[in-house]
Length: 160
Image 1 (cartoon, rainbow, N blue to C red):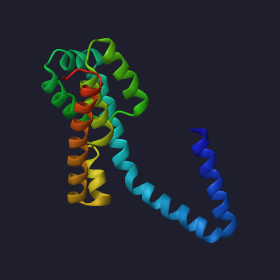
Image 2 (image 1 turned 120 degrees about the vertical axis):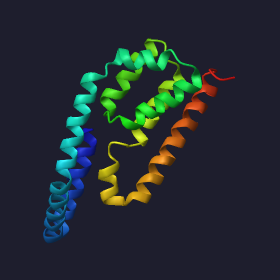
Image 3 (image 1 turned 30 degrees about the vertical axis):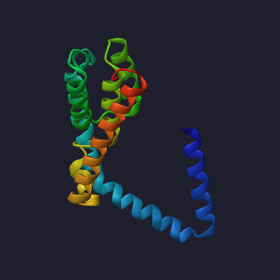
Image 4 (image 1 turned 90 degrees about the vertical axis):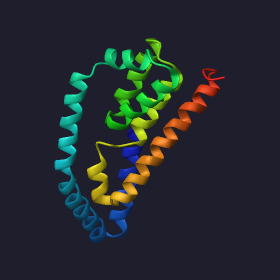
């Protein structure tokens, strides 16, 4: 992550060197946009915190591990779609799920839909991209999550 910060700092420095006015104008524009989305981001963070408080990893493992493969994939995809969990929490959670006996297919469906589909972020995305584009992006992400899960099942020998 530090490399990303260094690259960003370097590029901003180059921009500042070539045109201070444009660089400051870019910062002003970014700040204005950030002020517009911060209330929605705060609400999402509050909602995610409350959901993570009430839904434990044991509960997720119980529902995802004790179902049939395709039911588990669909359930995991839906849970992943409506969740908003950052990667640094999602990946260790997936390791716990695997240790509790949840199949690779189901974990794959969960993580892929978690990262690619955003039911909670739908209003925020709609404000920037429009409802149609956001709906298409989410539907495509959901379909890709199912495809990735099936491919994972084939690769790990859980399907055939």
